[in-house]
Length: 380
Image (cartoon, rainbow, N blue to C red; front, top):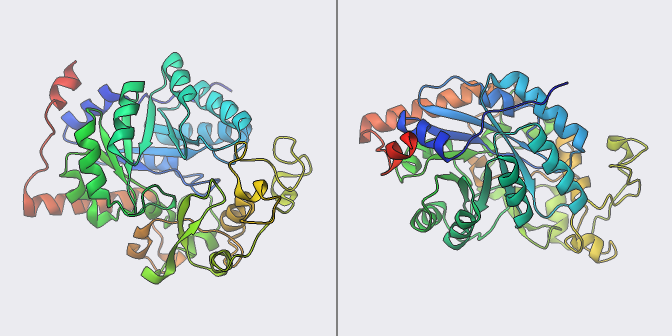
């Protein structure tokens, strides 16, 4: 089977999109298999005001699974943009092989989070694959521009999963990043559909939403996983200490997060129920060494502290285990309007609702202006 071959989403492509009066709407990748089945459907969504972009998470996948997901997305995307997200904190063997698959399948871009690897920037440059950095400061934005990034994702304090500065509001981060880089910037982290137009008016090239797409009738995630994100209030969202370098992470409160807060430990269990007898890439022990050397608090403690992130996330997304799974989520989970699985809409309809909100905002406040230099960049 031939490679996927998506269109590249680089600075010039983004400038052309902006010059046409549209903004980027990026579906954020969610860890392990949470967003499988979404990227191609988002990328193909019709919209007059938004250029829709899908993102596939490579984390927790074998190279074979990532390749299959990219090819499924290619079949569904209708020529649209689909990128791949990789955590720099994962095992180096997996990081190299998964990056190679994304490059071979000609993903629209490679985005890196949860750590910094300059190697992937070089691989992208050598292969002609646009590189994207997730940033939590203006300093990091300036660094990635020097390294050759094509655009940036400024992820604020309201994001789900692993987060940076939990005290820095997204609007403040966006202002700081825009002041430190000439690259297109996509705002991310706890964004609700109702926030879209006001954030776009700050001068960003687009928005990234992940949590909103959990509440979607499309995608492979277990119905129990989706249902866990519905009807949530402020008290249902907590920040935990992850096993990944002790980073802070945001999730839906459940018995698992309560047990972590009480100091309970959850050492790894067999994953044969998911990976089969051969294990994850031939790693058959309960700990499949999914994180880089020394980065897993559970492994580093001799499995006497913290938790196995593979177990917790797999139980959530594949089994819908409301008590023993870990349900990462952004703060915007409290704004999801649907309350039952039966109410969930397909991705294209969620996007249409976001577009309608932008149109209504502009009717009340005026058109969102183009940032300076956009037309020149599109023509250059």
